[in-house]
Amino acid sequence: MRAAMAPPPVIDGQQFLAPGNTAPPPAEVAKAIAQAASTAGFFQLVNHGADAELLARMTAAMHAFFDLPLEEKLKVRRAETNAMGYANDELTKQTRDLKELFDFCRVPHPELPDDHPSNLTIEGYNRWPEGQPEFRAAMTAYYGEMERCSFRLLEAFCLGLGLERTALHHLFEGQHTGFLRLNYYPVLPEGEQAKQMGVHHHTDAGFLTILVQDEVPGLQTLDSGGQWQLVQPIPGALTINVGDQCQVLSNDRFKAPLHRVLPSRGRKRYSAPFFFNPRPDADVAPLPMFIDEEHPPAFRPINWGRFRSLRFAGDYSDLGEEVQISHYRLGGKAAAAAVEDAAAQAAACAASA
Ligand SMILES: O=C(O)CCC(=O)C(=O)O
Ligand SMILES: [Fe+2]
Image (cartoon, rainbow, N blue to C red):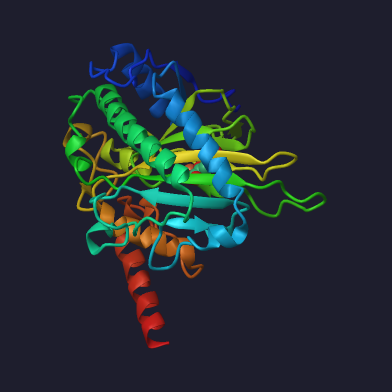
């Protein structure tokens, strides 16, 4: 018999994300987060303390951006050589999504132009629509807030895993590759069959994701009983999920949940996930304290920069399989080497075409 599964838990954050609060995350909160991260992989944080004004400003600016004429949005369209900017043709698992998006990342040198070689990150460089200063200002301020909240959540995750609260900071500090994505799911035209998803099922590749979703339901996560559960929107809450790299570091103690977004019927839907990702040079591998006879290392080491570039190639190409952490799972069928070989072959074919 299948156990009855519950939707992801709601956790009272006790204001630990409030600006200026640098005290260790309360033990009770860290424990509740660890419990959620090791089961559903998703939780909703209420009473978190993150800056509500910045959140409201980001939301208004996001709506205004997607309301721009298509030709304006296409001027900042992302390209094969630059993952940042606008897209309305994303592929998740080689299936077209029914949505538009806008991505931007950390700028190493804000004093230099966005396309200056020093501002080229593994994600690419930022593109901003012309004549929309509020969009850029609101997004940049919100990004800073998400960056700060991510480091606080990292502390809570570490405490929940029984580590020192700053034990994993070195994988992110100074050069993390977190990026903010704005998602817009237009209403599915009347009478049109939903052959596709808003976003096809996937796990998030990085360490953790902080999602703001509006009041229109759509996000679902696969529970351990194999049922899709709605992640019910809660006004003001932050929806947080474990990413692949956290699963690898914790040697499967924390789980990156499969999730998807249903096509929007009747109402438009907006969401904004902040993907907190490691430094490009970070080698991510199961931590020694999570390895013992009963728990041998479940993954071979993953170089984040390499993993990310292979994954991005998959966003564009429908040749071959998108790289997943399962390819790095020890004892798994497909070894990372096989994926890397396939990528090299595809590149060689493209070069000789
Ligand atoms: O729109 C959502 O609620 C989630 C989107 C998502 O999973 C993603 O962009 O990775
Ligand atoms: Fe996602």
